Image (cartoon, rainbow, N blue to C red; front, side, top):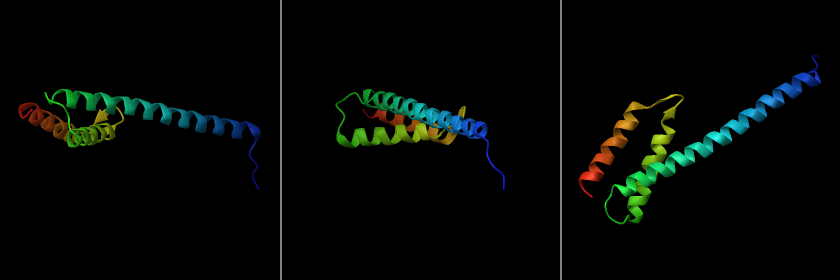
Length: 92
């Protein structure tokens, strides 16, 4: 039966802790991105935002942030988001 040395446990535990910490950092960064996108969308309305406007903006922002894959973004999600932004701007 193989035994794990204390050094291996500490190293694995350290990697796991760093991974959890990084996931928390990413979650905070994503929340900030979502909030910025929601603010931009609602600002472009040119009128007070209603409940449906806020829900729609939050859904679109969450979709865009979720579509962020590594260093790139899902192109079709971005195009959809931009199309809605354009539509919203024209009909505000």
